[in-house]
Amino acid sequence: MLNRRRFLSVAATAAVLGSVPGRPAFAASAASPAPTVWKGVAMGAVASMTLVHPDRAQAQAMIARCMAEVERLESIFSLYRADSALSRLNAAGRLDDPQTELVQLLSFGLSLAQASGGAFDPSVQPLLRLYFDHFSRPGASPQGPTAAAIAQARQRVGFADVEVGLGRIRLGRPGAAITLNGLAQGFITDRVADLLQANGFDNVLIDLGEGRALGHRPDGAPWRAGVADPAEPGRTLFELPLGSARGQYPALASSGGYGTRFGPNPALHHLLDPRTGRSANHHAAVSVAAPRATLADGLSTTLLVLSPEQRTPLLANYPTVRTWFVDAAGHVTGPDGAPAGGA
Image 1: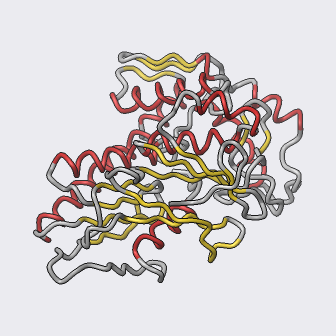
Image 2 (image 1 turned 90 degrees about the vertical axis):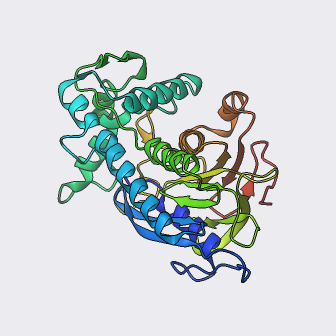
């Protein structure tokens, strides 16, 4: 899957686990169960899970189950597997008897597209493909695709023409294609959290591209995530408590143009405004805390694309979320433009 914002999610994990990136450092008491920590690759990028459970063998077996579920879901959502359900949908323009998860996630994406006036659009893939193809050619113009090429690609983009049902998904425009990279990491993160909780694991920290936490650390303190400055990776802008208790945030997602840049110009990146076909540069980064990682994932992408004037109506639909906006100088504000920080 497209590595959209791995920098901030990894930075968040490093801040949770300790001051040295990639090395866990827990402040657990002697009586606390030692956490079982898994680190590896999921969805093409570095990932981690930390399970607080007295039975290490059981925790390791549960991690294996979680990774099998990640693999199953990636076989549905991946754009980089020719046999995935999503790839088959894009190749044929329709998919009969789609998996329930694909129907659920695409339906949510279309509802977010409607709520945002098209700032978020799962059918943006033809534009992304245009940019990737352009910059993969030797001697490509550093200014990006021409206005005519962008206009032509935009004719294949339009969420209103995507039909989703339990029996069939159909793309209504010739050459249309779907990407769920703005949602799939959050959705898979939620599925793993649900699987863990259903099997009695109530104190866990998950980073599969988006952060999700249940319960607390071994010492009873909340998990904490640091949101890094996209312009200065070693600098933490603010920290947030993650977990299930009052005053904590169950899920955290961050989006920014730093995730995948096209060419030497940092203003040309993968977070495209489907309405214009151009990269969105209203903010350097956006972080969203929400009850579910799927929602945090989708909203962080959408709010990165929306201008400050456009975000208020969208956020009115989601009163349980909290948002932070980072500008190029590393200043953090809330949705009202006032300075904001962590907790």
